[in-house]
Length: 236
Image (cartoon, rainbow, N blue to C red; front, side):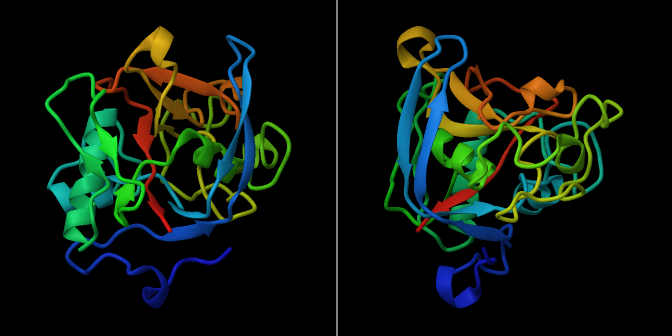
């Protein structure tokens, strides 16, 4: 796994420097819902994923503000809803000279938001992409012993930490588990939960059993909390 370079993936312009991205290989991933015990398998095409969650520094540079309580530039941005995250993706795409992925509407439930799979701009990872990238070819609930890779209830002292201060997974991605939960594109279960969207990964306040590659959580696309952020992806 190597970071993308200027020639291969048309990185953002200097007006809006985007985050470092890694090329994630395609593959197959099996997802599981603990409440229903349902499992399903998804094929994942190669894609690009940010090395870390979006930071306060990046959000501030693009929008002029950073949601959440004041903090260091390299803390992950939090207090951001799913709707705000997809709007940020479009803003960064436009500022970077890329084609925005999302078509937005005024629907507060975000059920009419559409994603263009062929656009080259920034977007949220799908749930299958997220889990495939988190596992990085490893079979267990954690890609390495948790204390070395994640900030969680046992070692975080109840606060968020700057990104990339724990070891990365085998594909070079930091903070896939712990520190902040991360929004994904998918709706959790449209039949039962309507517009609720998925988030993954566990946070600094969570016990170890929440910080697992397969753990799924959900909330309304307008939901905000102090340990929920997001990570950027791009299609190849």
